Image (spheres, rainbow, N blue to C red):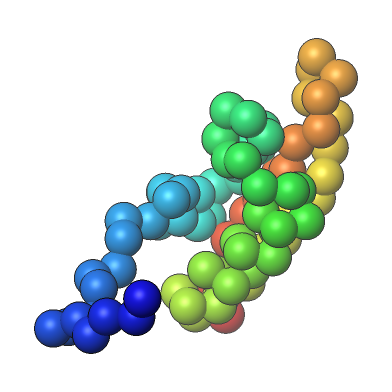
Length: 78
C-alpha cells in the first residue's frame, strides 16, 4: 500500500569513485573488479559524470593482459 513520507530520501553514496577515475589520468577498469555494469553502460555513465565536471571522456574497450575485456577512460576538461 502506498504511504506518505515526511521528506524525499537522501541520495545514496556514489557507486563508483568518479572523482578519482576522472582526474585526467588514463584508467583501465575491469568488469567484476571495478564495476558490475555492462561495458557500454559504464562508458555512458563516465561520459555523464564527465559532463557534470565540465568535460568529456575518451573511452575504449580493450583486452587485458589475461584476455578479459576492460574499459579504458580518460577525462578531458572542456
